[in-house]
Amino acid sequence: MTLVKESPPATRKARSAAPAAVKRRGRRENLAGYLFMSPWITGFLLLTAGPMVASLYFAFTDYNLFNTPKWVGLDNFTKMFDDPRWQKSVEVTAKYVIIGTPLKLLLALGVALLLAQSRRGQAFYRAAFYAPSLIGASVSVAFVWRSIFSDNAIVDRTMSVFGFHVGGWVGNPDWILYCLVALTVWQFGAPMVIFLAGLKQVPKELYEAAELDGAGAFRKFWSITLPMISPVLFFNVLLETIHSFQIFGSAYVVSNTYCGPADATLVYTCYLYQQGFKNAQMGFASAMAWMLLLAVALVTAVLFWSQKKWVHYEEDAR
Amino acid sequence: MSATTPAAPKPLGGLGRKRAGSLAWHIGSLLVLAVVLYPVVWVIGASFKPSKDIINSLQLFPAHPILENFKGLADGIADISIWTFFQNSLLYAGGAVVGILISCSLTAYAFAKIRFAGRNLLFSLMIGTLLLPYHVLLIPQYVMFQKLELINTYVPLLLGKYLATEAFFVFLMVQFMRNLPRELDEAARIDGCGHLRIYWSIVLPLCRPALITSAIFTFINAWNDFMGPLIYLNEPGKYTVSLGMMMFRDSDGVAANYGGLIAMSLVALLPVLLFFLAFQRYLIDGMATSGLKG
Image (tube, rainbow over all chains, first blue to last red; front, side, top):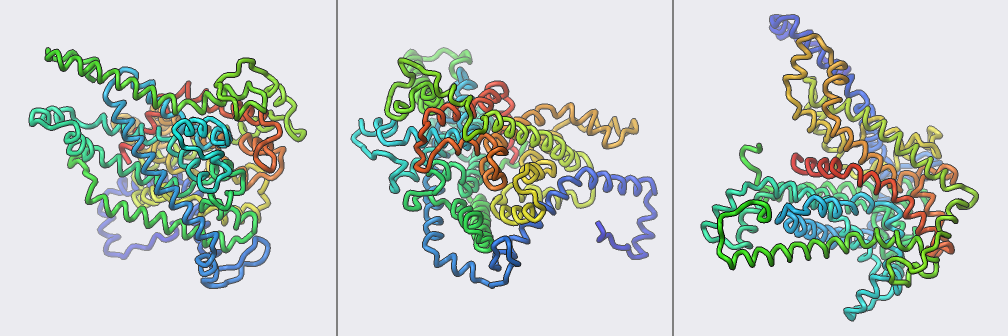
């Protein structure tokens, strides 16, 4: 706000031609706007923009919270790329995102299509299916998950009936990640609700016209439903992908706080937490955080770029 | 659709197919329902089982339910009453709700109803923070609060809520306010009302649904929050429920008092489940509109 420049004389004269009342009103609106915004502006500077700059600086320093940060150039980044545990955390997170997100969204879309078929009971099922999204992030559910995926517990016994015996998923480095994938897929309700709202917006006439032309169910889905809901599909893909990059609590609790066994659930933020808050490697952890930001920005950019090819926005969006 | 709309007469074969389709619909929905609700029903049943049966018994509800697990909770853990955890969680969640309602509605009002220079730029910045991973801010924020000697207080957990850093709720409220009829606040302006008056007497009352949605989501998010308390609170007497629960497990994760852990899990879930049952409409509609207009 201190940047308001003295306007050059010519424009000042031109502006003063406008009625003084209008000008005063504009200035008053600016003042009111910034006063109403002041909590957000303070928060943005103090808790978002400032920390981002600080974190970028820390990323290039050696800092343990008690020393003065010492500039080390790209050391943190070279150390990071050579660090097998960092590589492992990238691998674990990538696996989690690549397997979990599509499964969750496919289930969400499938169930939304099912529910959209009938109005009777829809509200009930919609609410019941949504409930896991609210409690899924809680420590309680993480403990429940640990329990039902234990050796000889319900999941293992059910799978054994189908000749598929794993034993305890939680103690098995090959399987524990799938236990987390199951936990995120279980929370398909939130994207499902968004899909359902999108499906409601598809004009019925389109289907009627297609039926007259003899289109089958699959054809109708492919040529009408999918393009018409592509904006909500895009929204869901974007948000779910970004969220699942940041999984922490459930991995931490399901793996009993050490993100193992054998680092099998060492998701990115778990390693960031260990480095920053257990080993007091604030510089290294900040470098990790910036790599996460870059990855998320890259995925976001690719998604936005790709939407030109597959997302159809209505010309006159209501 | 097909079940309720009186359709034109159809050939008999079509009717039979319709009934079969409806049956398949119900079977499909019930199957999904069973899988979705199983963990919730499981934890209710398990909390009435003796510790040794919790994992291995396949019965959802025990033949001989016991109350020992809940009675044990009354003794607390490590000399701390579990009510302390609940009070702490209530303080955190309640404080968060108040902060979000005030700060986000003020910000949203400015975005939706005031024409000020730089509004569009600030709005894009706000939307940008929606996608920003929180972890980039984690370390510098911790450093800042550590230098200010605010570790082990609720300030780091709550400050952002009073400074409208939760862009999702600002966005939700902006969308809602933009859809309010313009005539109302224009009429008020002509009558000489200032922005504060319009905000308080016209816009806020009309925004009740958006405010309720934001309040409940905020409460539930704070109640479930794990990472914040884990990082900022280090004295068991200040732990929230989600952190206090961690004290019920021992080093190998299979708590000696397994029944207590499961009973605690259920008790910790109850407020969220009750909120959900009472307000599910607001939550689901809030969720749905965020996606449609995003």
